[in-house]
Length: 459
Image (cartoon, rainbow, N blue to C red):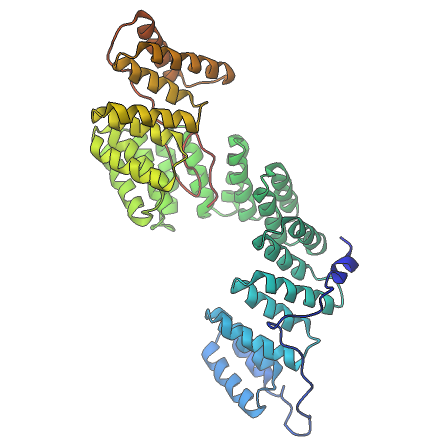
């Protein structure tokens, strides 16, 4: 990136009202004792995190200097920010800028406070002012400019700034921010390249290995994902993100006891994680321990009552335990939070069928097909249901769609294929038989894995 272009981009020289306009020096050295005389003591208390004593010293220094001690104002701003008093910290950093308008660190701290207050456009202007004051290109400024541009939706500018930060500083944070930007743009391949480049510089970073593992999960490359998560755990055996992600991959392979062992370790550090309890519940579901599964899922629901995946799983387990009214309630609640997930409507149709609501069951199946016409399980289940209500021709039509889908998908579930053969044979003979066994989608949640047919979310 051409730094001169970045500097020249500030045609409007206003630093905005957030960065106070510099005022003439209102005091002379002869009128006061040296204002920096006790700065060393303030610094020593601050680095030792003795903040209360530090604030007393600062108050005394500001009183003696009539507020003109720049370093005292600066440290007080840092302390107030750590206490969550962002607006107050902003005011002290503005005072620092007034006292010393050429100090780039003062402007950077003003910009940081603005960023934390959510005033991202003002923060951009302040960081641009800091860039102009900086004697040499500053990777930290470009890193923060990139973060601010992401927040205001200026993704192309954000990419320029973050690329510049990576080239200048090569910090782990810059690589992660750039990778996250590529993920926002659905350029997952570039994101993996950025993470791999970062690992060349930081080969012991469990966070980078975990992020890359989660990204490979999204790409469906589960072996690569498992390898990266294993590397993360090799460097940090207690990395909870990696434990949850690795557990979900193992769980998806139906090795439930191994997955539960991973979750047991993670539970020591994340006892209140709804995702953890959800995944544990679905492990018990896979082991056909339905009471334990419901118990864990209800705890997950208590911790995250608005998580649609947990509600979906509760509906699924209640279907298996033939508690159809409860299943209907949980699935209906899940749809309120996520109304574009076809398997939820498929399960809702199953609950309605068992509650003898034929009309709404058909509507639920039709909605599932509308949301995902290529879902083979929905087609087979709908055909089985149509068979059970003597809608032979409509059932055959669904099986014809299923065959077209099956030709596109090389590896379909064996159980699904067997059920499809049975349903097709019954429909062809025109025999009204008992409804075939319904195929449900087993969902595991998290930050790590939502369901067997959905891509994982990051922790």
